[in-house]
Image (cartoon, rainbow, N blue to C red; front, side, top):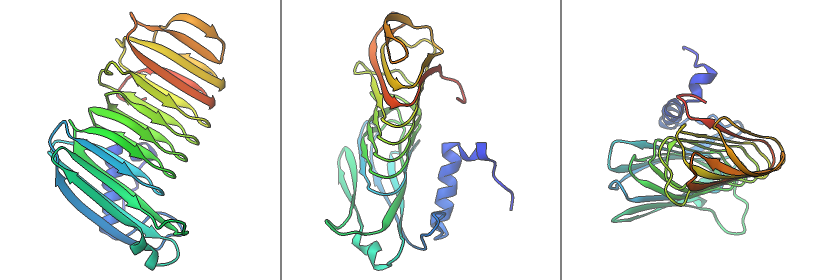
Length: 262
């Protein structure tokens, strides 16, 4: 079998293909987890429709494609008891202009089950809200991304746009916004982690960046309005425009020019 390089595995499309093959084969790469069950459903959704997902334990990856269909592939993985798999359910609510997914765990009971999601949505869909507790969240190739939240895990966005609001507590933020932000601008916030934002070179925005224990760096020319180095920066990119707010406590902040790879 040919080996796959580390750099290749960082590409969202290749990660999706590998995860799909693992799920189809009924195999999970999570150490210590041996019992799994697959979920696979598809639902129509026109461009402009909304998609939401809530999960507790496990990574979520959402990738845009050229079909007006939401495809949900998931694998439920139990650590100890096979019966626990059936106690965790995946509920999908479909409306004319929206698809909403909720992962239900039994209340007030310890169930050691992780649910890993790989979802395709139309490029023109709006990822309105994805909320998680434990796991990395990755979005790629979606024109409108809004509210992204996790507690323990990284958040990554590639080829994104819209009014991104990304928040984690213990994790890094890596946001590549290839499309213009709307008037609401964007917000990125973490407590323990670094933050990287990549935007087009001609971005027009008002920047507010705060880092209590970390440095700030901007590859784009920034017209400073105020600065409390290295903790707080306020300024404009170009003539100013939509607000960009970047906050971390333990970690650095970098704003760079969007390229094919960052």
